[in-house]
Length: 169
Image (cartoon, rainbow, N blue to C red; front, side, top):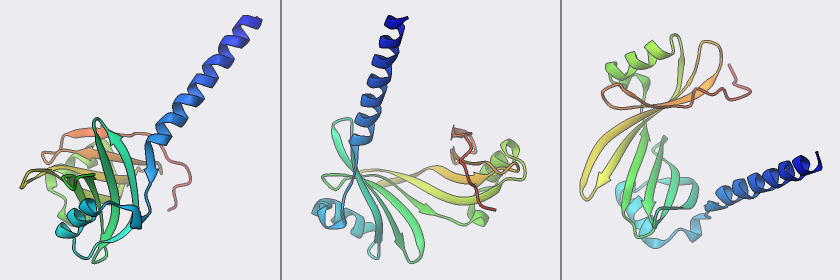
């Protein structure tokens, strides 16, 4: 019995340390501490960007800055490497601008859901930009908030399917 309690305690400790380590990988960066190369890249594509939040995390061998911003009232997000190279960016779009095949896929999986936020994601490789996905935050008919990521062809790529508490009507 004592051994089981010790093992359970050790497991809980390792779980806590592991969780803390994951959280430590992403750190909030004040706007005045964002590297010049990252700011130059952001402002070259979004010259009127007003930064709301910036975080930095190690992804593979790269340090990546995730910048949430608004430009002309439109929400955006950009992932930019420390050297100023874009990985991707997302811009908010209106539900009416969502392709029918994507809208139909969401309606089929989540009938009568309310679309709360829609982001159009573009990947960047050199000078080439390619529409890669749509990220949609929605509220299901039974008031569960979740996020679904779909390909431009309407294939579901990711689906949190998990309810978030305290969804406001």
